[in-house]
Image (cartoon, rainbow, N blue to C red; front, side, top):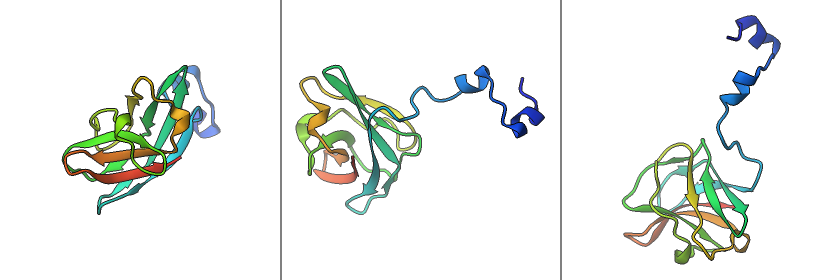
Length: 127
């Protein structure tokens, strides 16, 4: 247990570090969301390359005001439907999406929240 005095002095213990989230950024390209189509989308997304693939990580500060059928995808100066990674898991907070096989994360410079039902953008993060 950490005493209040230790916290005020700035002491950090191993148990405190272990409580941090599994991904805290710093290992991929990060962009900040801007809403689209009159939707409010905020927070950050990180495009992480690993091996021949990678993932998109919506950071803990991600928020979305809601819409039917929101999906996560990539784009290069525009949305690319072949990069769809599935439905948005949550309108708030951190979540991870695996990039489809055969898609090279280096070829893209945006993360999209896309409404597939109405074929409109809901938010985009430029990387």
